[in-house]
Image 1 (tube, rainbow, N blue to C red):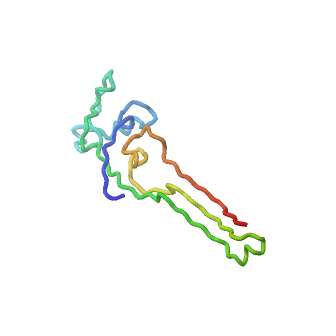
Image 2: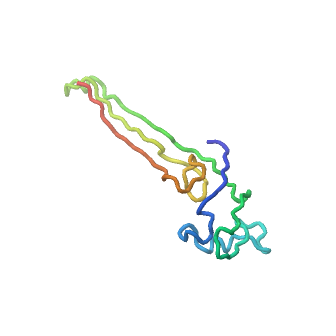
Image 3: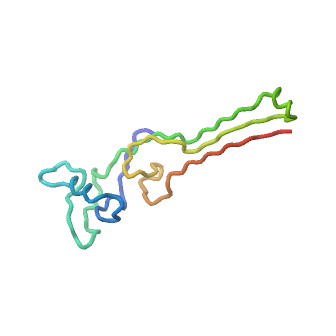
Length: 136
């Protein structure tokens, strides 16, 4: 995939909920202050209502979502006929097939880039299959 940007959204951007996404120090040391005018996150404030934290869309939430993925790979080999005739087989073919075998990206909060930033979607799945085709 070529140049692509996506706006981050959802739970990974909430500083205190859920706790397993980020340690507090990630926000504390990377939020805006007079000493850190170019910080990664907006100013951190405490309020009884987490929904009041600064979630407005900004270029701060825009990330490089370019990636390269090996989407599908198939290969097979047909055993030469002079070998298969010895075991009374007309045709013998072995094969491998795989989907989503690997991906190269710099996307934070690892998610499937084809899912457009939805962190609550199904995880990235890889599929492998091996097989043998026999013709008698």
